[in-house]
Image (cartoon, rainbow, N blue to C red; front, top):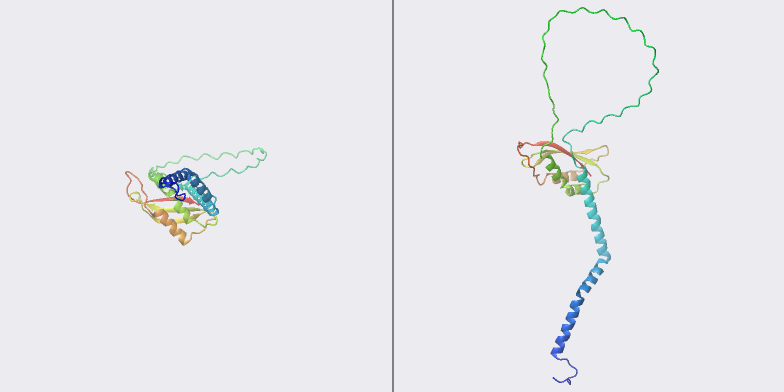
Length: 225
């Protein structure tokens, strides 16, 4: 075609121009993406949402670590703490020893025969922890995020003693007792009690106890929050 058609471009020229523009856009695409991501990142709403997520994640990790750290077994009684020795006052100066009293008359031997009786012997042993106790404690600690949600809104930290009957074969727990520990312990609300029993009971625990009869065993744990 001739160039006298009013300055119109041929289809080949238009095609080459479109290809050049597409190549230029393709080359600038990574830079445009980075600029768009930076604009979104600097938006006030996005920054506030990211800050809130960091705070919630840090609080959940702290609660999980605190509960897992203070979760301990109460199967055996703690050894008695020896009392501190009281400070003794200085001894008074020694006084002269009094004269010993006269020795009493030596009694004469008695002639009698008696029957020797044998005494019964009783042995007592400390109750040992069940063989599956470590597995049980680890699985309770794994439920710490669910337990932490039951104490949301608590005014101050505290401790809770949980005693239950554990069936090592089925992994089910029953006959629960929840008792606040310490003088400052607050009574549990009804919704807190239901939340704790749901988190501690479901799903059942998976315990391995070879050679152990499938009878419920009464165990207790202390949960601090």
